[in-house]
Image 1 (spheres, rainbow, N blue to C red):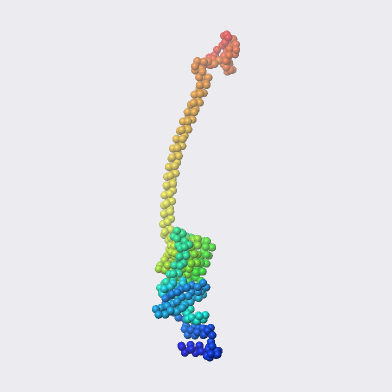
Image 2 (image 1 turned 135 degrees about the horizontal axis):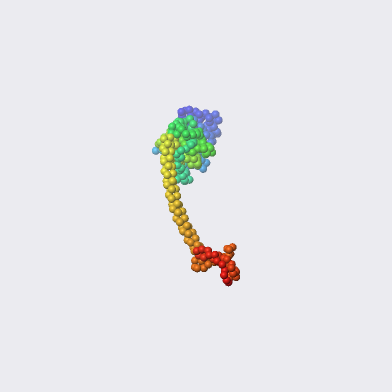
Amino acid sequence: MRAESYDLFTSVLGRAGIGFTPATPASVSDLALEARALVESGLHPLWVCGEISDFKCHRNGHWYFCLRDATAQIRCVVWSRDQRGLPAPPDDGMQVVVYGQMTVYTARADLQLKVMRIEAQGDGLWRKAMELTLSKLRRDGLLEESRKRPIPRFPKRVAIVTSPDGAAVRDIVAVLRARNSGVQVVVCPAKVQGDGAALEITAALKRVVRWAGADVVIVGRGGGGKEDLWAFNDERVARAVAACPVPVISAVGHEVDITVCDAVADLRAPTPSAAAAAACVAREEVGKAFALARRDLSEAMATRLRDAQSDVARLSRCIGQASERIVGSRRATVGTAAARLNALSPLATLERGYAVARDPDGRALTSAKDFRPGQEFDLLLRDGLVRAQTKAI
């Protein structure tokens, strides 16, 4: 390989006649460009392991650091365009395996490794990326337990945001059908791994919100590696789940898999099948709930009837007592009025020995001038009427 590289180097400069005589020297730029061509042609992209040191994120978005072991180090660069597939920037001291192409930075003729992929030994980068996202969400209060809503027990419609071709949707539909055939299932398809998956999941959740017909939403997919599940660790997906006005169940991967989506959702299910079981109760439970509701309703009606009867009896006693008081008061009033009337009555006067003289027409004769000799008149006494005649005046 050294001979091939040397021939390539000499042939490029040799054709131009540069660098072989003092009269035709090569410029520094020419030398740097030839060195880069030599390095890139002689070393294909490869995986290299080492420890991160002197990590810097430049204002232009590029990452710069050194990769070192016990005896050597090499400068590395990660262009901003190559960072899309990386979960998070590495930390100093982190043991990593990087994939890159050896090249020469021509401005200083520095040898460097152009890194295109980084994998931490263990889950360091993935864990760091999750921690950064969770920190942002926690700062905004999206991880608070108080904001999480209960899952409705008897939903009419369940929306599923997942891949329409995956095993997860088949498992969810099978469990829902087995537990409660009356539930309507609506699948909102979305890509669940790879480039663009996070955007599709976010868009699917927004479609569910616009539809406004779901009672509960299941978001998830089946098992997979960290990269396969990474879309559910995306901050955009987490915020879309938090913003959904409908209760959301997150069912991503298997029981051991934990994602950011799980932390934000109203309920985390260990598997898609478990999410379906949590989304609606079984028919047997519905029957038990109806029986319990029927018993509670009967007891409530009996209690209400007893209370109503007690109220009626109490009101009856109150009305009776009030009536007796009113009648007694009226009787006393009538007695008082009768006594007054009796005191003013002519009969009372007759009782004291007085009499009333009346002519045959019934008019009272109250003066001696009303009498004539020989005139007949009636004398009204206490206990009867006496026919009388005037003898003299």
